[in-house]
Length: 123
Ligand SMILES: [Zn+2]
Image (tube, rainbow, N blue to C red; front, side):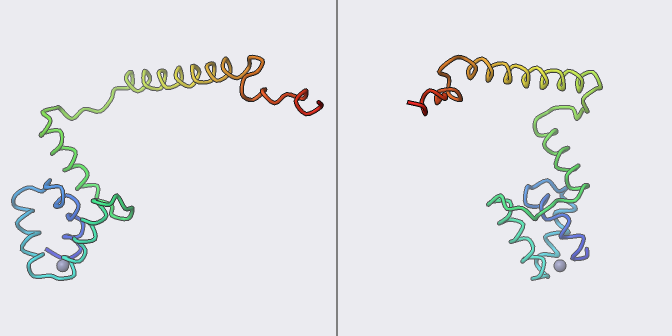
């Protein structure tokens, strides 16, 4: 395994999402390569502190998703066009409700935006 290959696997390794074979190869490399141990420490710190910068490869993300799905016992499924449309509809309704609620709360006399009316300053 090259350093480059190991670096791509470090996030998945950190989360224990590598297959046994890949995990053993990463560990064999880490034992022999201080540069990759340094990279792993950075990944570990970024994950634990929520820092930006460490980006798992697409393959690692797929493996992570599969591992999580397996762990939770759910089938990996993409939303159908109908489900996407429903989600967009629900989001649009929430935006409208939030807008209507904001208007209802702020348009009454004495409501926050109008609390300091022109009268307040002319007295
Ligand atoms: Zn290395």
